[in-house]
Length: 351
Image 1: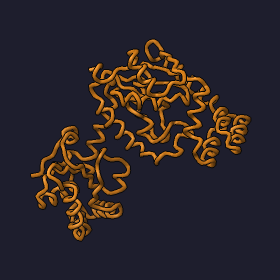
Image 2: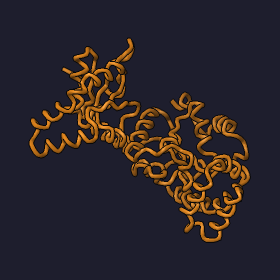
Image 3: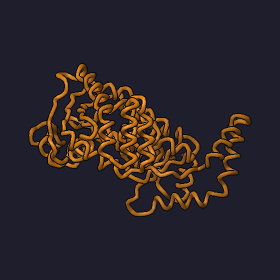
Image 4: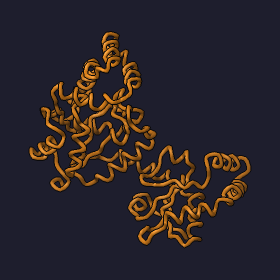
């Protein structure tokens, strides 16, 4: 009989992680580190589902057998490839509810003498686990700062020095503004963003503080779960400050190499909030590749947005935000300063 494990035991088990759901299901969201070895294509899954509703379980199973039968050898080869190597560990298999699809592939793996464990309750159980992570209390700390302050670079420099950090923008593949998707890979679905975020938080459990960047409730199309967002609003804030010239230089370095058409479209998306004069001035600057001039026009809008959000945080976070002028120092120097002055804790000091 194939062994079934609950979510955390399944995640902690060594071995290749194989999701046998259809490609569309996998694309919508999956366990981090899993590979997709689908039992059915998207069309085949729909066909089996229709048969189940119309004719019942037995006919659906027969239809599934007819569809999968010719591909059993190919599926077996895929399982053998994943299980190759002396230290591969048991194959960890899952489907939507931990039912027939994963059990069927588990049977095939067993026939090939491959050790197998199944996720009890399947991906559906994993999703419940994900949502439960956001209801937990986390020792959050928020790094604030106006657009162009280098918050993400500083967080990554801190992470490299042992500080517990969750990079929201990295997980969402978006920098958070109208321009935030330029030059980035496609964003994950909101569901998969939650999967990534919950897994990352779980990996930081035990830390005395976990640092995140101050963000709006939505990072591009990825929404921060409400329970976590409320915790962020109540967390202590460290607001870093940089000279305007330094901020402009960083923004030009980040966005100056992007295609002009993309920059213009991103500007037009916030035209109503910029106002007609600033929009026209920004577009004119872009047309002559005056990246600094274009950024300057838009910083007024983004600074007002940031200040408004920060003022709301002051009413929630005990004592309001602590402000720190970092001048023009680079991220590594700033990270060393924060650690030296005890403004952040690494895992060793915090444990």
